[in-house]
View (cartoon, rainbow, N blue to C red):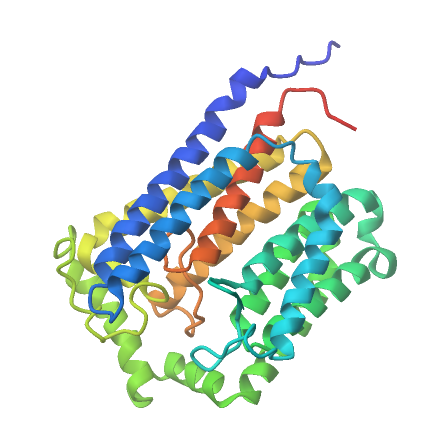
Length: 373
């Protein structure tokens, strides 16, 4: 029986082109939605310009990095991980002038005029490192002591440092993103079930340990009896309802007028629902679904295990972030503070998201060509 011929790179090129197109649409739509949602903020123009600069720089990053052989990330995995841990340690020790306190948390690194969220780089670094180690270990990843344990130690360390900021939602997202890489690499389901139970108990304990986290949970469970927090969640739902089929019109939404906090970031999806209606929400969901389908399709057909794990992990970070953001806005889970990828305000998050797309695009372009050893 003859072996099927490998597909020519040209036959696979439509997937990477469509992935870039979907990313561009989400980013541009996000800029427009953010501009409308931030109109009531004190520095609305500054927020829009920050995001616009991030989009322009991110587009340049995407254009350049998508042409760089993705195997370079395998060599850079340890340095990027160490850099991320170093930045997170700077935040943990609250270094004056470098780790400012903003909105009650130390999540941003400030180096002169540059300010960025270190956890965004850490999330990318964890996926790259996990993909590298999983590809190196091969079938050994199915063992717990020699396979899973090294991953848990790194995931646990990075998540703990992010938790100290404090930022429980991002800490959980980092662990979940790394877990996707492990799952893709073939780790045993039984190990995930045990870790899932342990993570559930750990998450509940962390929520109970902080009053503001417990308040968020109470607001989710009993929104009518928890005051301001419950009112905000109800307003987010009202935004979707008032949008109707086609929305109230671009820039005409009302919930951004202090009815929900951070309408331009944490509750951007609800403002889209109000101004663009069911049609706009459907388009956004369809775009993210298409993005994930393309990303996982590229991962499935990647030239080597490292490419498979890396593309799957980076695609999963976008899928998880978008799903959690939408779930919060639809009152399906307690508030987390996670933005909508490519769309919510946050220059560092946008840059890392576009960098991730660039890596996935390069993996997609490498299919059908000889694998470099």
